[in-house]
Image (cartoon, rainbow, N blue to C red; front, side, top):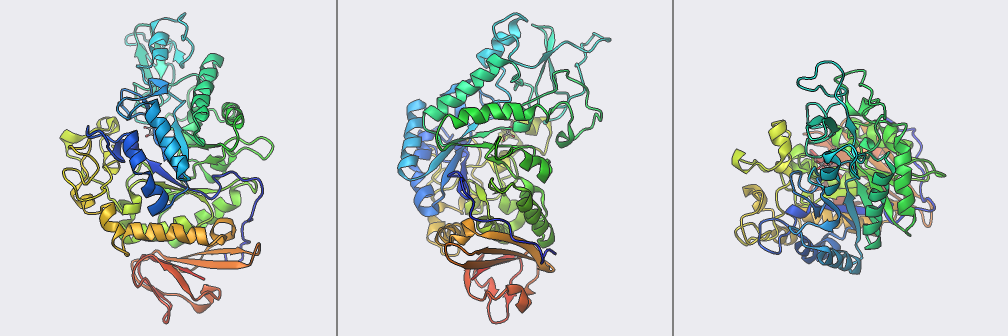
Length: 538
Ligand code: GLC
């Protein structure tokens, strides 16, 4: 319980457009298919932008990769940093997407993957040919460990995120190349100036085309120990790595990225960090007011925090205190790499989570389809796409990447005119945008209402925040501001499976419900909050 805790600072100067924005992640393969090949594309996404601007009314879009790619990791394996894959369209389609988004008042954050490329990238193909090739030093290469040579032994004990050694033998060069992710995703060596410059130029390419920011993939992998020393504990967690992830050298890489972004007015730099990083390690990636690095290192805390009032209050309170006063907090409850929100928490829990996510003091990242309450889809073995599943059964991410259901048109709920790359799923086929727009009690209506509330109550953006747990299973957020005019809201979330009666004093004098997570979630007379429900009180 943190009843005495001070409220966090509010109303800061010098913030970016993304401070407090609601950012919607479009996973383009699964968003909307315009050309009937079963895979979503840019023109499809462009045609659905009015949904994002007018029905949901988010502020920005984070677009997952649309680069040229063999798609073995669905675009996170790039073969050209400055081309659009034909599957998604072309540069003209990209420009149409950004242009239309801007016309509708939506900002665009482009996914950017500088840690590795595809092994089919011309840089790597050249690099692999010989130790004196033009791109010879663009990747992390190493000789085998001394000693047993048949077969050659990896130079150290670094592991891949996807399991097994992070080193792959390339017989052409008689050396190992590092792959922190899948074997076909060799790690670039960003300590090598030409490689770093090429990456900076690729960033400029998209910033020149008008994107409002970049979401950088896996930032904490971007610097490695140049001596390639063994991890002291061979079973290391990535969050604890000492050499594979070189935290001393990382700020220099991020500073380079920051400098590029700063060449342009009003752009932001978001970074994906290891979900296991502590709050302190995560917020350290903001840098300092004098030497800022990332506008937003993703805070994945809510993905690993149990959805219980005490754990949530502790996380929100600790995180809010840790974010430097000049920076802005951010929250995420879903993305293309994790099980869907409604599958993790159930529909009622997902509704409460939406209330929490959109009333907390933060830039908020929403994952496409979570606003419809989509659930994970069981993928039969013959339809499995994600190589993570083949490498580590059970870790595949197909289940949470199923296409969006737009309406009742066959064969794929309005997503595509043909069988889609992943099934829509029977349950999700009934959760269409069209149906939910007509139902005031739908998940989509809740999200629209929450976004409207967020806009009409500046205290939800600027107000100070205190998160606490005043009675068992009750999470309370208190949002409050004195300027420009005094305002105060209390958000209550009952995380238990049973109804709870809220102590009168815990309402802090707030009695008028503004929004409930579901019909009859809150009984004003008896102060009863239904099981797994939330209410916003003024
Ligand atoms: C990030 C992406 C994930 C991808 C991985 C390797 O974690 O979110 O989808 O597989 O990086 O690029």
